[in-house]
Length: 337
Image (cartoon, rainbow, N blue to C red):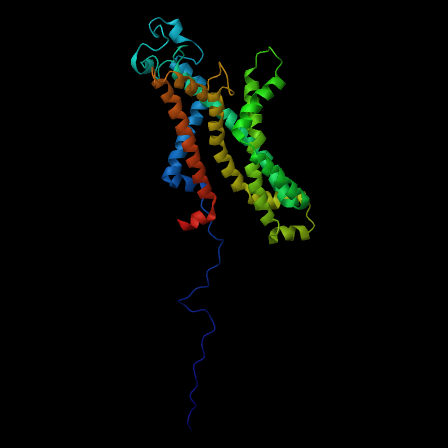
């Protein structure tokens, strides 16, 4: 009798050469923005320069004490042989020597190096305070208007366009003495803290508008996204939606704005002081040093070089750092590299 051929039955157990399928793990974490900035040569160099300026600003009293000079004493007038009868340094290159590393200020004979050190503190204090105020105002206005929409959005758009139509520099020049006259009695010397407060108020009056307009447009697009609609459907309050759903999605935008705003305020403060409506004597200030240097440039060009180069380095480095931060926080920049 013929035996029918039967096909072998495949084994149902696992193959001895194949193991269980690998478990799906979490997606790889996104690169740290700081690491991405450090991997960028330009960004790392800019960060190094900015940190150097910050350290010099914080340690200015210590550096000045080790150096043995201060920014207020008139060394050229108190020590014979340092200044000529015309008030110019006797030594070449603005009086640069082992005792005065960056020379002497024409006329008063103050030490240029310590004036630069304390000028960093002046510029950074005003710039960081103004950036903090404008960022806060921009967040409050932009997020609220973008989320509410309707008549609030239209009124805000009209107001922002009206404010942006004014020439900012002329308004800054006009507002600064007006605010000072309102806060200080006639015939009374203006305290140093008042000068800082006036500049911060002047910069904050218009500096918040660009950020508010940017956040308004971003929030208007985010409020229609699924995660916001889901939060609303679950009964979340407006405060919860704004704080827990919208603000986390604009944090990178805020950081980039603050990073780019600081050098803008530093340059603006120097420009106002150069024009005579910013920080006044005896507070050290880069803008006023450049203004004085322009008056004696033909006789002593060295004096304007140091504050001019310091201002240029700081503004360029902070702008480059802002670009690096923006690229590090932009997902499209990470995928393109």
